[in-house]
Amino acid sequence: MTGSRAGTSTAVIPEARRRFDSQAVRLMADIDADPWGSVRASVYETARVISLAPEFAEHGARLEWLLNQQLPDGTWGEGPARYRLLPTLSAVEALLATLVREATATVPTRVRLASAAADGLTALHRPPADGRWPDTAAIEVLVPSLVARINSLLDHSVTGTLPHLGPLSRASHLSVPHGFRPERHEEIAQRCRTGVPGKLHHTFEGIARHLPGNTVPVPHGLLGSSPAATGAWLASQPEGEQGEQARASLSAAARRYGGLFPEAAPIRAFERLWVAAALARPGLPPACRATAGAWAHDIYDPAGVRGAPGLLPDADDTAMAVLVAALTGTSGDPAPLAAFWADTHYRCYIGEDTGSVTANAHALQALTAHLRLRPAVSPVHHPRMDLVRDWLVEQQIDGAWTDKWHASPYYATERCVRALLSHDGPGTRQAIQRAVDRVLASQHDDGTWGIWGGTAEETAYAVQILLADPAAAIRPGWRTALQRAEHALDAGDTRREPPALWHDKTLYAPTAMIQAEILAARQLLTRHGPGRHTQGVAS
Image (tube, rainbow, N blue to C red):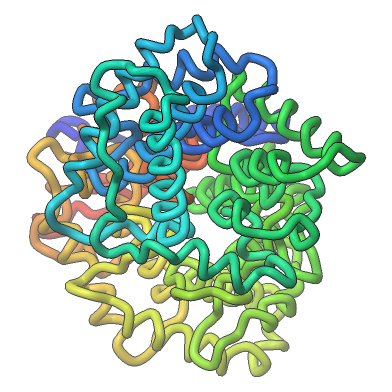
C-alpha cells in the first residue's frame, strides 16, 4: 500500500466490498456446480493407476503426462527434495512396471521410458542428506512398499525379462532410506489379515500385495477416496459387481480430471466447509449465505462428518460443519465431537497416531460459535474447551504451530490464533503475542510470507493473524508489514497455479480453498488494514 492508499477514504470501501462479494459469489457458484472439487492431478496417484490399472482408457496419455512431469534432477513432485521421495518412487515403479508388462509398447517408446526410469533411480540413490521426512499420510508404509516393488521389477533385467536398455539394465537395487523400516508395510499387512481398519483404506496400496483376498475391504465408490487404493483393490480382486462399481468410480474421476487422478476424490465436503468458513471472516455476502447454510446442512452428519466418501468420520470436518452452520445462523449439534475426545484434546479420527492442532483449533472455534447461538449449553462444553485451549498453548514452539495436514506453520498458526482469541484463558495472550511477533519477524523482502519462498496463500494466513488480534496493531512494524503484504497480494499473478502446501500422501493444492483465503485476506485488509481505522498506531 502506498502512502496515498493508506489514506483511502471510506467512500472507496463500498466498491471494494462489491468486488469481494462478486468474487465470492462466483467462487461459491463454481464450487456448488462441481461435485468433485478443484485440485490438480497427483503424480503419485496417477502413477499408481498406471501401474495397477493399465486397462483404463487414456493409459498412453497418462504415461506421456507422467514423463513430462519429471524434473531436470530426475525426480518427480513438488516442494523440497524430501517431499519428492514418494512421488519419485511411484513414478519409477510405474515406468518399470510398464516396461515389464508392455514389451511392445511404442507410445511412449520403451527407450524413453527406460531413460526416465534410469534418471529417477539415479536420483533415488542420492537421498537428501539431512532434515526430517514429511509427516504425510502413511509415508512410513508406502516408501518401503515401493522400494521393495522397484527392486522386484529390477530383477527382471537380470533374468532377461526386461531387455537391455542402457543404464537401466545396470541399475542397482534401492535401499530403504534412513528413517524408514524396510519391513514396515509387511508388519502392518500382517496385523490386517483378519480385516483392514478404515484408517488404512486411503493408503491400501501400501499393503495390498501382502493380504489374502478374503480380508480386503469392499469399496463403495473409490476405496478410501483414493484412486491409488482403488487401483490396488482392482488389481487383487476377481470380476464382480463391486469391481464394476470401483471401475466406474475410477473412470468418473479420470473424466473429471482430464484422464489423470488427484490425491483424493471427491473433496466436496472438505472444500465447501473450508471455503465457506474463510469467506465468512470478512462477512459472507448475502447471496452466499443460503448456499453456505445449505452446504453445512447437507454435509452435517450426527455420526460425524467425513472429509470425503470412503474416509473415516473425523473431528476436523465435523467441527467445520458445526462452525459453518453457526456462522450462517443455524445450529449444528456439536455432540458428534464427543466421539473423538482424548482426555485433553480431540483426536482427528479414531486410531490417530499424531494429534492435529488445526483440528482442535477448529473444534474450539466451532464450540465458541455454537455457544453464541446456544448460550444455555455453555456449562456442558466449557470444561473441554478449556482443556483444548490449554493443549493448544502447550503445542506452540518458538511462536508458531505446525500441523500434519499442511506444510506451512502459517496455516496452523492462523487457526490457533483465531481459536485462542475466541476463548481467552491462562497463557493465551502471551501465546498470541509470540505468534504475532514471529509473523512480523519472518516477512520476506518482497512483502510475502512462506516457508519455501513467499506464496499468496501463506501471505493470506499471515495477514489474517496480524488483523485478527486488535492488540497486534501496537506492535512495532505492524503497519508497514501489512502495507507491504497488500502490495505483494496486489502484484501477485492470480493466473498461476498455487504451490502445493497441503499434506495427503504427497503435497497437493486445493485451489478453491486457497482462493477463498486470499480473497478473505484482501477484503480484511481493505476493511481493517492500516490507514482504515488505525491512524494513530505506531509503525
